[in-house]
Each structure stands twice: as structure tokens, then as C-alpha cells.
Amino acid sequence: MAASEELFNPFRPEFHADPYPFYHRLRSVEPVHQTSMGFWVLTRYDDVVMVLRDPRFGRDGFEHLLAAVYGDDRESGRLSRSMLFRDPPDHTRLRALVSKAFTPRVIESMRAHIREIVDRLLDRVQDSHGMDVIADLAYPLPVTVICEMLGVPAGDQGAIRQWSSDVARSLDAIGMPSDAEIVTRGRAARRELADYFRRLLPERRRHPQDDLLSLLIAAEEAGDKLSEGELLATCILLFIAGHETTVNLIGNGTLALLRHPDQLGRLREDPALIHSAVEELLRYDSPVQRTARITNTDVEVDGRAIAKGSMVVAAIGAANRDPAHFPEPDRLDIARRDNRHVAFGFGIHFCLGAPLARVEGQIALGTLLRRMPGMAVTGTPAWRASSTLRGLTALPVTF
Image (cartoon, rainbow, N blue to C red):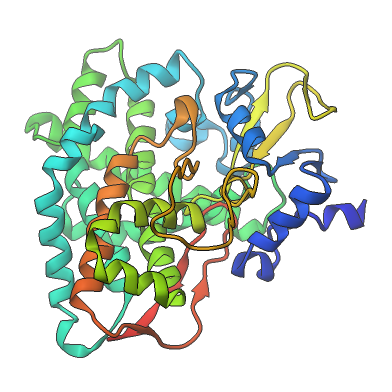
């Protein structure tokens, strides 16, 4: 079993640096793989899509896995499971409350403001001929946008950054062996975030604004749509999901382009390719590498019997490099056609913020290439120690 387990060991530093050779080997040797811990890992595109759309693979059953990381809900100040870990009808109800704020039309109306934020951030570093793409652009852009949408005061953004990072890091621990410190920090950060948003509620109840927090409070006060625990869990989810993955899109995308000067040059010569370029960058180095479901009945996949109640990991990063769906999957092609990647998931849990992430990525990357000619990486990029969310801790460049 030890040799077989090596097929999927997402905690190795080599995996963090480049998981794709590991995915290719697992897909070719054992595409429906059961680990020594009992959970399953699927790496083929068709299998991943099937798991994400098939109701036999659901979110009910995650309660005990989440409790092992974050503690019992009653110990968390009545903090409920977010819609991310709910099945219909609860998932449907919670998603409907916030979906209107993330429609493509609403996000397109924000394009000019997002462009202003990007220009303001780049103005700060333009004359220094160097920057850290993560600290100076990839992080502050999406966190500013989601804080404005939620109604988080600008001065508080720095204080809640570490909490968000700790919760995001703790996602690796759900259903998998993990460092006790990661679990401890994730649990504490989740409570801190809940307390933070709870402290915002009284003022916003008295003085509603045109933001998501006020919208959620109105739903909670209606009595039959949202409990306070669900309200707080939704705020935390929107805050973390609203920026953590977009940080990775901008950072991973910038690095991929710098490592492929032919594609970088092609995009500079034809800026209209930015839309297809962002889709290709999402496929090529996906910000979210995996998600999971729990089987609610016995299931057979490719002749392998998966028992009811099993955790099944859908390896999104592997699916997006499956040669059965993407010719030359390891080649970056910013004009790739028929690019049906699953970087935003699939089915009822398809990423609510996909339109926002796309616009932020298009504007950030397009403006960066236009304003910072001759950009080059300085030093060795450092990857964050996470196998669920793939991203860089820093990306220093000169221009």
C-alpha cells in the first residue's frame, strides 16, 4: 500500500512546486485511486465532471469532517456550514440570496471601477521598476473589491488578511491528515472572522447600505430565509472565496506568461486575446486544484466499487490537463479553442464569483503587461504550502 499511496501525496514540497507530473502518472496508472486512508481520487476529466454534476456525490456527510477541523457549530458561536458544504434545498436557498450580486451584467458594470483600482495600485510601483506581483497587485485588488461589495471598512482589510489565509490553508485538512497547528490556526481564524462580521451587524442593522452584508441582514430579519449562523458563514465564504482564488489566478497567470515569452509577446501584440488568455491560464495552472464530495449511495466508477459515505476527491488540476480533452495539455496556448476547463467547478456548486474573477484577471493581467514592459522574474518563485488552493506567496519582478 505504501507504494500505491505515493501515487497521491499532496503534502510533498515537489507536489506544491509542480503537481502536474504526479497527476499525469496517477491518471495513467490508476485514474480511480483509493488511498490508504480510504478516500478516492479521480483524475480524468470525464470522471471529475461526473462527480461534480451527479447528485449521487453530494455535500451531506461533511459534518464530521468539518467538525474535526473547525469544531462543533455550537462551539463556533452558532456558525453554520456555508453553502459550499450544503446540498439542496439549503444550498439553493442560500445561493439564491447572493447570486444577484454576481451576475455577469452586474460585474460588467464594475469593470471601470476595477480598472481604477488596478491603475492606482500600479501607480504606486511604476517608478520603482520593480514590484512583488502578489503583495502589490494580486492580493490588494480582489480583497479591495470583495470588501467593498460586502461593506467591510477599508481600514480593516489588513487585520483580517491573516485570518483568511489561515482558513484557506486549513482546507487541506478536511478529511486528510494534517499538521495540528494548521487545524488550530484555521479553527481560531474562522471564529475570529465570525466575531468580526458579528461586530459589524448592529451598525449595519441601524444604517443599511447598498452592500451584500445589508442584503443578508435583510434576509435574516425576514425570519424564514437566513439564520444568523448562516449569515456569518456566508460572509466568511464570500470574503475568502472572493479573493483567495483570484490572487492565485493573477499570480499563477503572470508567472506562466513570463515563463512562456512567446505567449507573452503574442498577448502584448494582440491585447484582444486577453479573454481567451485568462481562460487558458485558468486551465493551465488552476487556482483551485481539487474539491471533494461524499457518496450518498454505493457507486461504481470504471469498475471500482465506491461505498456509500466515501469521500471522493475530484482533482480539478488533473482534469484540466487531461490529454483526452485538451490537445497538448502541458502547452500554454492563449488562443486555445474549445477550452472547456473546470477551474470554476461544474454543476450546482459552479463558482458563484466566476464572472468577477474573470474580469479582475482580464484587467489586472492586461494592464500589467501594458504598463510594465520588459517584465522579468527575479529569484525563485515560492509556492504556498497548500495542495487545495495553488498559488504563490511572492512573485518579485523587475520591469
